[in-house]
Image (cartoon, rainbow, N blue to C red):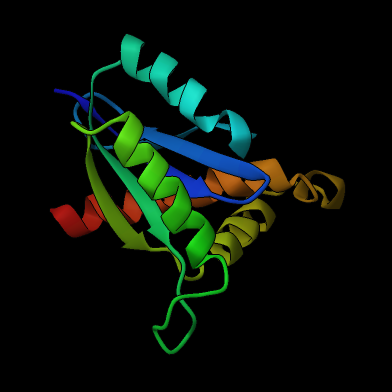
Length: 137
């Protein structure tokens, strides 16, 4: 069975998570510079079977798009041009960064380690993907 990949896209960094082949468990894969994401995905898709990509949809508390929404929409247009056959789903990503930070605290990471914004992005992508998997069931 192919994997599902989640993207927590940001202007500078992008967190990436992926499921196991049975699509049961979401795991953080990496955090990369956003300007290298398409190259990374081409390489990853050539090595792994991926059924679908999940991209976070940033919203305000009232449900309206957040200020980062246009940046993500621009990336989605590039993604769809580069990977026209790949299925794409959007998932509400409100609170994922806060949940990621809380996860770091709960897991006992020291204050210095919690400053790693790349790790926060990767954990946020993992939370996004795990939420998607739970919703899908």
